[in-house]
Image 1 (cartoon, rainbow, N blue to C red):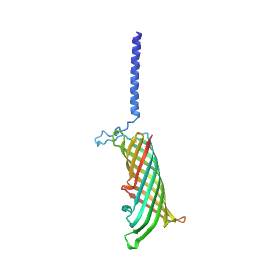
Image 2 (image 1 turned 90 degrees about the vertical axis):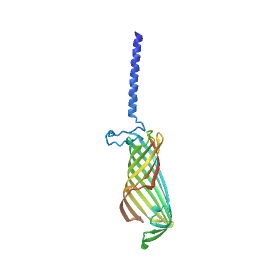
Image 3 (image 1 turned 120 degrees about the vertical axis):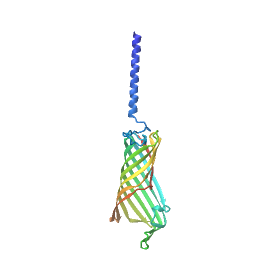
Image 4 (image 1 turned 90 degrees about the horizontal axis):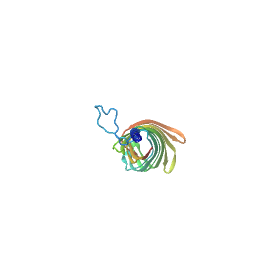
Length: 267
């Protein structure tokens, strides 16, 4: 009798442990999203569904901390940026360093903050400035310009996972930023007592591709495709403002001067 009772208790205990393990497994599956799992939209069963699949690459609740770096060199061979200059011997470079922090508020969607430091320099050894008129031609030589700028921006990033392992995806950043920059000039090796200060507010688009090298480390490349901006520039000489210019600009095209590579740590 005692043996049967013990056996029955063991069977009941085994069943309880099995049920508890099954419940824990279902709970873990529900609470921890599986990277690469297909994201099914609420209206996916409607007749207008186009059959597009989107895989999970950035789960909800994830923090992203990273750094983005860009360096571009241009010269007088880049004629598309020097349309008004003839017989020119010039070169320049642009360097950008951008730390950022982002939070994924839902699957494959995140919002973030980025700070950017930029420096640019250019030299014109000689060149003719041609405004398509004999009365508006100028000769320039031994001119050097230095630009330093600081930017703070918020952005929204949307991801599209491309594989069922959650390793590769596309993204697009919609960014709203404020930039403060200063440009100083040197002519014939003498520092000029004039410079320009610019304040800019810009809404821009930056698509790119992301690849996970490890589970918590990703690499990405992005390129600017333009946007709309408002600019205020002050021209200062001997400490006094001698001119001001306000203008708006809308430009949408691939910008080879705005290509960046970066690395992110996912927490």
